[in-house]
Image 1 (cartoon, rainbow, N blue to C red):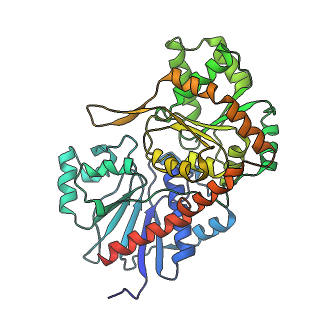
Image 2 (cartoon, rainbow, N blue to C red; image 1 turned 90 degrees about the vertical axis):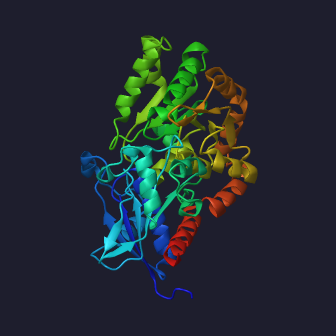
Length: 424
């Protein structure tokens, strides 16, 4: 028998901070609301942040339409529910009981290194070993989970969670926000004093080591200081409101100096003339401006649960140079085959598996350097085309992203999963 009444879903999540989990949640919930509000009652409950100091940086970074939707969502006040959706960290797989009834719970998670450990979960569960988690998962038949990539989903596979309760639902991009805009491109380059002849590389995120930051800084140093490519610049966008991004940058330079990979003079040249650093919280529109201003998104990452920024970059028409193995290959492979072959340049990589089960990419530095030099003409050609109205294949790629990797499409996948859980 088909269900007639609305599905009642409580989102226990972060909403008001510029953290990737919060942003994923907000894009998911806005598109669910816009598309399914007639068949789903949405309630929200802001959950404690991972760090207490994050309470001082609350900010909504979306369009006014989206911000208004988020502000006006119904706060949960003990209403009856069909499902709880949790998207916080540590991962909260505790059982939800309301009026003596156990409510199905769907927990979002990512697994950057394709595995999880006890400290990834709510400390109240007091997990000490992997076996503790496996036993808990086997006992809890109302637990469902979702992750954004097959790579990430391996984290719960090892705990015996059934495939149909461990559904992969990709992340998406708002294609109306992340789009090519030549006028914005010129304006932002002028603001950052980037010349027309400069090649501006970009990387966005928390700047943790798994993002490949040491590779990126070494590449810039060799290009600029060792082989005289003075026209290369690097824009780094950290997340200073949440993480010590600038401190990370200083630590990486210290590590490179200790390894004799860069001298003090070389470091100062980069910091003075070739690195643009900002860790301000920016709106999605401003983030699109950065993608438009750049010439190459460089992502030689070691481990990622999904890596959303390169998808946003592609939607904005910015070519990406990215590790061939790992989680991102799941979506870059699809985009490459559907109009994005000009925009995706693969970095040769292989997956290493360590004794603790962690998986990460391994990249040969010299091959990465040669890849950039070998593709310099292509990067410049794409750069010139973007300066003069865009790349022909961009429209084909953008149409594919809109169909298969938009937040609108993600909301369909998520609603289908919610509906299946409730009926199940």
